[in-house]
Image (cartoon, rainbow, N blue to C red; front, side, top):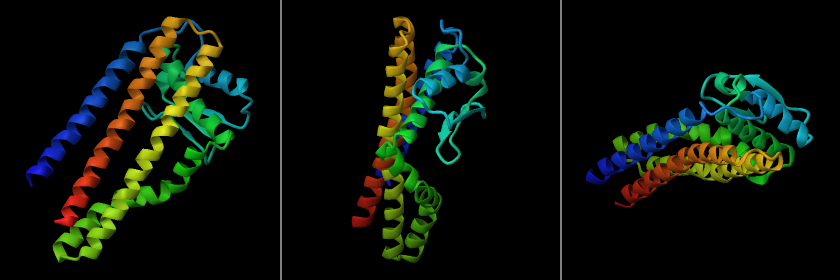
Length: 219
């Protein structure tokens, strides 16, 4: 039980630390106006044109939920990204276009992640109930099934890492190619690195949880 509470504390520390760092970086550079004069939506449209991606739409989404949907080929940008001309908005928009470029070019990790999304979503919602049933009824088959389901969740988070890193790399390459000033490149890198940290923290926390579950099963 001591190990479980230690795991909880470490997981919370990772999550809170990563989230706090991201908020600090995003807030810092959301006050840094981009010299391009482009809003996030305009920057995304320009990058799409540069790479010849013409079948992707850009829409205003909910705050803090910037993403690219490969099913509808839609980039959703937060109002603070869509409408604003800041380094945070520019870097975030270009990162999401990076995902659209991955999709257009058949980037393998993105295809793998997209393929396992339905299974990972189901497993992430159901594994804990299956585990509790296994413990309550003392049925190792249910415990094993729960561990397998959780392992799928961990796999999804691990596959997500190269997808996110590559999208940020594409964004940085583009911003360098258009000769963005060095101080804005440095700021953009700080924004993208901070956002990537949240994925690393989530994957690490989930991996620790999986190791604990495997140890619980063996005992």
